[in-house]
Length: 405
Image 1 (cartoon, rainbow, N blue to C red):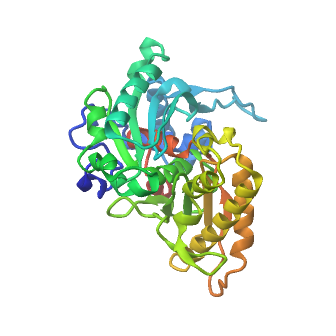
Image 2 (tube, rainbow, N blue to C red; image 1 turned 120 degrees about the horizontal axis):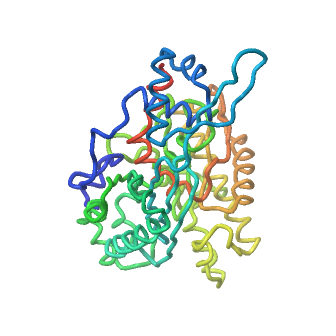
């Protein structure tokens, strides 16, 4: 990923990556129906017509087409008090498949999901630092591994690969504990184009923290407010901004980059949010205590962090995140702050509880304090967000367009 490419929003496939066929993108009304069913669950034709404003005849034609394409399937009839039973139509899990690659500073994950968003395959690898050659080699090997798990006639239904990756990776040699020369190759490499040259489907790329927010929008709770901020805690903390129901990425694709935000510690010192609310800080604390932090990158379920270190990290992180939320909400009146991360469920739950307490210490006179909620996705948010890129690009409407109907 070159310096120029990293400065641009990369929510669509990079130039030069083959495989996109615009004629295969769903027509507007088909996307409208697929978006509605994804958000609301299986629905009968009459209800779809009512919610979309489309005629019953138009909906019937669309539903027959989507069923014939294997994207929708009939569910059990629902009998009412009078008349014929209605037949809800829901997403067909085998209708399409999507790959999501998360490039982290300490680990790689490639997942495959079906049309309803269920993870049906995964390959994971940890390392000291990411290299372009290593990422490309891993992706090619892992893609082959996952595609072999599909029946031969289903491989053609793989609709694309999304990549969630931190931008400006070359800037983080120091925090990663490696030489600058180890990270400099990222300045001039475009791993999306390199991977895309060897696969028969389109490849899309987006900032990793923004992708985590995308996963919350596509696969998370439907009842989320239209304006909320999203924070994801990985090696560093990052985030996303949702305005009027849509992900706002900004001109350079990195809106919601909360990591560098100045926050106050309990001792009065001003630091960056990433200094207190990132797993890099927890890794450093474990090392200083003579422990081995490698287990935190294998899986959130594998954590064996000493209780006192975890308690101290959680308290510092909660205070810093509360500070960041208060600052952000004085600029935009977010209704909610959603917190997620590469964290055990119980740690995320404790962290959110402490953030709520810490936020009450701030003078927020003149604004309505936001609610603080746990993310609905969890540790897979970045890789699921990556997988959501081809799903959204090829089958869904922009949420704003849908809600305007």
